[in-house]
Length: 129
Image (cartoon, rainbow, N blue to C red; front, side, top):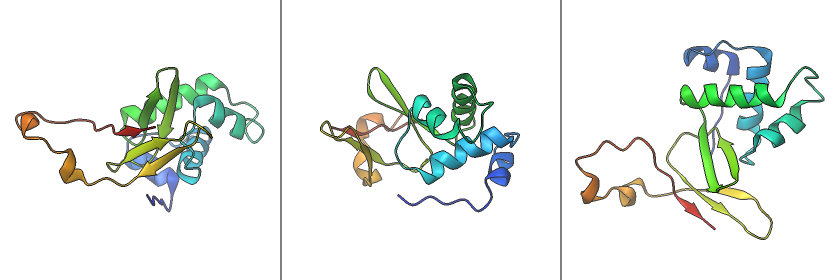
């Protein structure tokens, strides 16, 4: 899954998000690091570069990104919320040995089901372990 943005500040503005320095850096981290991070992972990666950053700011920023539909939530494990900037329909595989989560290309046509024809599907989640 390749995802590239020339100007993150303009991308955020286009999605009605004020592009503060912290928001730009958090979104840049998501785009550049395909590790499906947790709030803690993002915080630890950015706190030395942004000393004023708090976990609450990371959490609130991610919730704003989700609300504006530029980030997806991944919940493969009940106790672990992760985030993904790739909005195209795709699946995820979590290796139980190393703990990494990998993106999987999926055939969207196979996800369509006649039983759901009368419904508008808002989200797709496909997880493998």
